[in-house]
Length: 320
Image (cartoon, rainbow, N blue to C red; front, side, top):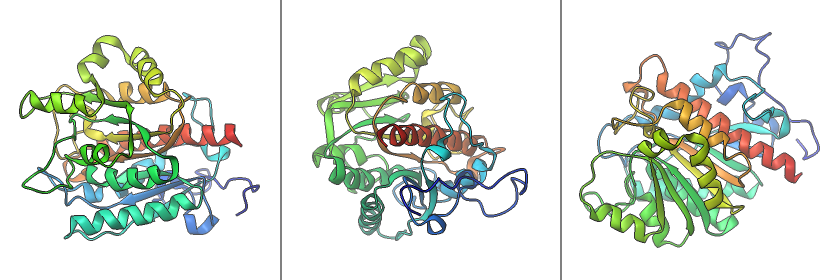
């Protein structure tokens, strides 16, 4: 496929039932079927960095299955994302489940390769450990990036049991490595108990602002999105969504659930409010389908990835 070809979209659901055929994201073509992509959807089936319930290694395929019901036109953003740019499913990045350091290196190398083609990445995790190598790859291309981190937890702790690379440490490592723009960092949806007040002090020193789930409830999605837009400006932006930013009522299928989270509607509305931002890549992580019911979590995750993909394709079309 050349850069001037019309993007190839999803399988026609009027000809092939949604429940039939391979479960690519949104029933889009595979990357090897189109040759190149403006947005590559890739899975990282890795959860060796979790500190509580495992199972997120199966999250990417659960999201793909739940995405069968996604449709080509996004009315909330008034856009047909799969017509604006070529989006394709790049399959999974296969990583060593027994060696976290090696897995991190493999993810970074695979992301480097995909980004070198000109694609933006929509990554389906996997646990949150994978955000660090993805950020490393994106920063090589764009320089230090702004970060919006949707999560119940800070993920800026130092180590777990002496391990530097876990799902609770990626953003501390990213700050230490200088790959984040520390003038534009925010957590969204945080809540729940911490190890101590020093956790918040350390987090603030790294440059993070915090919008708690209670802030979202009290101030509303529109005001929160406006605040985030002002903080980000037009900087290259990476969005990382841990599905546990949602309340367990909306995302039971995750490894470290916390009561009092956002609704799926609030998350989607905040993301839609960021449509003007320069989103260069994103991830959705920590979907653990073994704890899910009726695909509640994977459906929420698939719609989250859909909104993020729409933002990226709109930006690509505007630039083109």
